[in-house]
Image: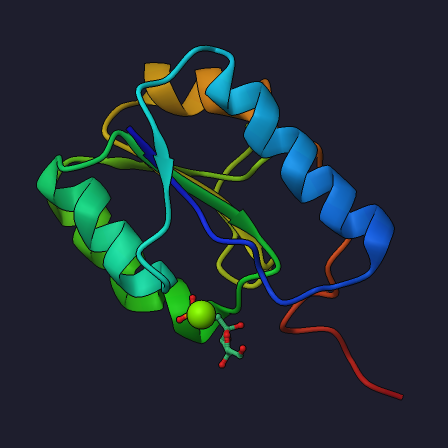
Length: 122
Ligand SMILES: O=P(O)(O)OC[C@@]1(O)O[C@H](CO)[C@@H](O)[C@@H]1O
Ligand SMILES: [Mg+2]
């Protein structure tokens, strides 16, 4: 069972990538793809083992900071959507029960740009 959200970006090419990622993940296949409505509870569901993985692009650091600690303390993994190290300010992440599951989900993610939370505004 995988969990995610539709995000808040309604730019049509971005929405296409969100749906195309979800379609590919469904067809891995997985048992289901759900969203609880908020990143914080999605990450708690990963930590509890109720779902195998949560991923999202466009999320903010304040939405996932506590969840990142909770998943890590539960023995789960956090990665960037490109498979690199998790970056709290990047506005994107995969969290999973283990690295094998995270790596499998990452293969299906169509990455789109999201301005970093620590971007310097001019
Ligand atoms: O829904 P979630 O995962 O808790 O929060 C996602 C989020 O983008 O949605 C809100 C605005 O729509 C923001 O406050 C927040 O950063
Ligand atoms: Mg929300």
